[in-house]
Length: 314
Ligand code: 13P
Ligand code: SF4
Image (cartoon, rainbow, N blue to C red; front, side, top):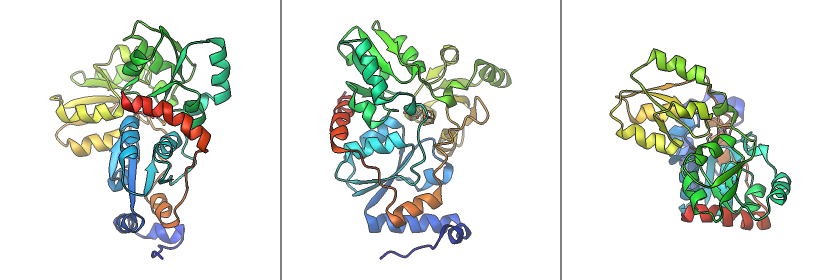
């Protein structure tokens, strides 16, 4: 039996470094690994064994050797890990951390949509439920969406659920992209006015935005990058000041890895409340009590896996 830290009230009194030490110990006892998305809060990023964007996290989850994966991100990401690693235990420290964009299309809505467009292949953003992935031909992430659309058969493609990512992909392909009407509220709320104001304050700064941003924001960006590509670019850029048009949690990692450069959010409070639900206490509780298990019914999991694996293989 592992030593417990007591109830949440008691835990709050224990300082963060003690909690982090206890998490390290429990990871060994449980043969567990912590993987976290780039938008997670600072203290969670600090205890993660692996940090990344959606594609990197799916790839990492598929090749991990540990028996237990503690997934710090939103639900569809943990579900993807569970689908790719059916023999492992995937835990999420807070099951309430969902992705509102992923909830904008259900499997039955997708089935009806496919009936309206017979013969068209469906590309689903990885920000979807397992049931939606199971109804899709292939998945994509923000870092490979153009490549996926080009690789899929057909001149007309159904693309769900992000209309902004769909519009971004349409810039690079001759195929007709038929978008679902979904969006990410965090990126969609980054308006041209916010960006212009920041650009006036920092005229020398380069502007990097996520492809989930509105087309008019993308139009004035210097670079359009997934969170993983932003992290890579931050290491190699020679620019001293960069304006970041995505969820603000990523700035912690960029600044930590590149102390000689300055990263500024293009909009104050560009926060995804779901990404902020997990904290150090919840990670500890997750490892102590082996909660909360993320499981996907076998039939859905097998069908969704086909769509994810096609993407990972590209
Ligand atoms: P990335 O794949 O770029 O990390 O994006 C995930 C996400 O949820 C963006 O809002
Ligand atoms: Fe979903 Fe947007 Fe939050 Fe990413 S930032 S998890 S797309 S709501």
